[in-house]
Structures are given as C-alpha cells and as structure tokens.
Length: 317
Ligand code: GLU
Image 1 (spheres, protein in one colour):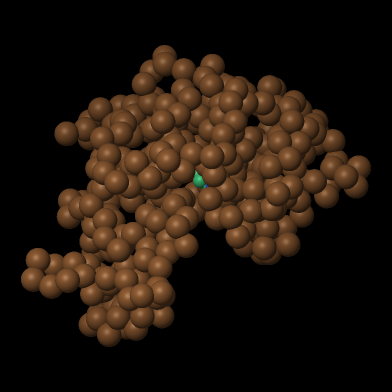
Image 2 (image 1 turned 60 degrees about the vertical axis):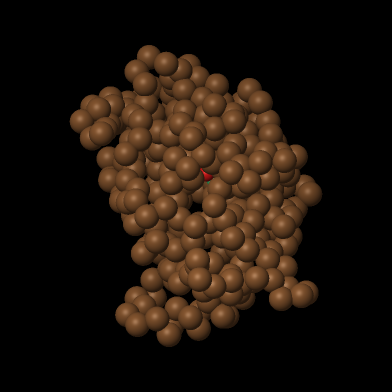
C-alpha cells in the first residue's frame, strides 16, 4: 500500500516535464499544483527534465519551460536532467531480474491476438514471448542485427497503491494485467518507469504530484521501488485539464502554449494563475500571485493529506 505522507515533515516534491515542446495550460496547471504542494508544506521543490527519449526532445524545450515557470513566479531549489544520470539507471537495471527481448511490436501484437481471451481494446499485456524458461533458451535471444530491449520479469504478488488526493485504491497483478515490461529499449534508452523510480529515490522525493494520466502506471513503479528496496513516495494525481469538448489538452492536439500567450502579450501571470485556479473551481479574484494560491491548495488537498495518513495507517500490513 505504501506510506502516507508523514505529518509535520516538510515534503520534497518535484515537477518532471519532458522538454518535447512548449508547455500548454494543462502542463502548467500540473506544474502549479506540484509547486503549491511543496511550498504550502514548507518543503523543497525540484525541477527534473525527463529527456531520455532523445528523438522527441527539443533543444529549446528546457529554456522555454524554465521561462514559463519563472514568469508565473514558480521557483525550484535544484534542477536535474535525466540524460545526465544514465549510470544510475544502469546500476539499478543490473539489480533487477531482466531478460533480453527482440520481439517487435508487430510480433507481440500477433502473439496477443493468438492468446485466447485477449481483451479487446485494452492495453495489450505482454504475453511473455521472449521470457526464458528453465527448459529452453530465451526465444528472444538476439538474432544478429536486431538490438535487444531488456524486459523485467515482473513479480507475481499483487501490488496496491492508494492516491492521497482521490483516496482511490488501485491494485494490479502485473503478470496478468501488464506483463513483463521494458526497462531499456532496443535503442539503449532507459524506460520512463525505471528512471522515474530511480530518480525519486535518489532525490529523496517524498510526495509525487502529477497528472492523473500516470495513475494507471503507478503500481508498476511501486513494484520497481519494492524490488529495488526504495521508499515509496506519497502520490497525488491531479485532474488533467480538458477543453470545451471534454478532451484532454495535448501538445500534439494543438493546445495553445503558455509561450504563445506570453509572447503575444495576451496574458499576465496573475490572470493565467487566476484562470488555472478557477478551472479547479477555486474562488479567486481576477488576478492572483502563486503565493496567494497556497491556502487554496491547503484547502483542496490538506484534509486529504491527513485522511490519507489515517487510511495508510489502517491499510498498512
Ligand atoms: N515526464 C512525465 C510527463 O511529462 C511526468 C512524469 C512524472 O511526473 O512521474 O508527463
């Protein structure tokens, strides 16, 4: 289940953007909430660029992110880039029970379809195509010329995690619901799940505030924390911002970026912050500063922090 946040101990929080483009208002709202959480409780706040997917990183993505955050009055105590931390991920990977896999997505898809009762439309469960067994060589032993990914042999135990903001409890059996997942891709890039778990532990992150889209992936990350003997942070998954059609804002979907609003002179930090706050139904004047929103976050999340603490105490084995 994992720990609930410790009362009275200032948290270490982080905002972890991928520098793949300019931030849209949905990204910015998550950044704001992560900052409010760290600062409302007198904690440290980190900025971590998740830039391992080098094909998608834009060199200007770092600066534009920093400028957006500073423009809104959001500060941070330390900054990191995952691309500078590869030896840490390599060391963690070496501690885990993994195996090489050269199956292509297409091959896995075919194997999934052939498996009886494969759920329709659900995220495909990796069917273990390359998983070595005691009586045969790994079928995925790299044929010459095909680079191998490393997959983690997921543990059989059910993993449960509770969200501190929503109180939702999510339990997953990884072998049946996810399958052995990739920790290092065939091109050598470390997977997000591995890097995020290694970094949160190495940076002493106690409270993870991030978008609700990552909630279904949380049991995978908790399982990795358990396998590596890391502490488990408290999780706060905040709602994603949607447009008037109810669709979530996305860089790829053409959501307006804060940079565009800034450069067009169409917005002031105070108005953007007030709009973001009102999008969460927080009552604010037409212009506010980030610091003025601190008590509103306390009201939004404060009771949950204590509630989660009690729930955690009850549910802990
Ligand atoms: N890099 C992820 C994103 O941009 C966030 C990861 C996290 O907060 O754990 O959505």
